[in-house]
Image (cartoon, rainbow, N blue to C red; front, top):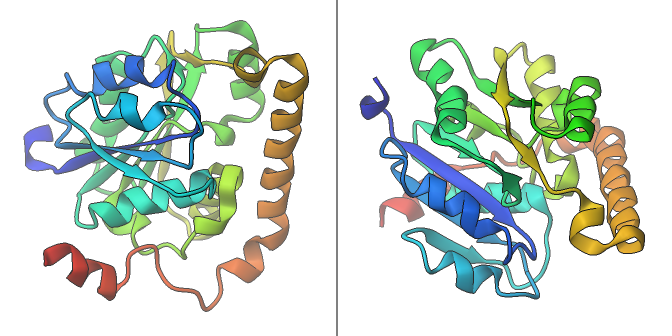
Length: 236
């Protein structure tokens, strides 16, 4: 069944040069993934160079524009996939079974629009956060026809997961939570140190709150994630 679907994996990355290779090593071995797109969101390190060592399509933003814009750039790069897989660049212990767990329900059940991964049995603090706020998990699979017709969410930055989940709820889309056993990610304090890590964590929460505040105004009268212009451009 997987062979009948075009599946594109999108990996947004910002200063993940020391971590992204582990994720790409797994994705590039998964035979049912048709294309891997890495979106370097204005990194200051060697993230882009590391990504280009792999058989992936690497995009580079000239400056940091946020996770929401990175995902939209990836979708617009390949605007006709049946399914998109969103995976963070800083995952720990990613395995093919995690990828399969996210995409298989969408293939098996045509009425599903999105799956959301939930970390379990990985790292205690990550697992606890997932139990309390599962909607913040960035590991997802989305049906192409659904996500391409969403209001453009380029503005959401780290609030993108909140946007996707809230819009799915408001539009009565069908969503399934998927346990991802043994999977985890690096904490911001591990990546940036205790003080800068705390700063980036607070910044993330501010962007999430901003998404809640601006959501209603941002979904009215705006262009779709993929409009006719992007579709025509992709066929050229």
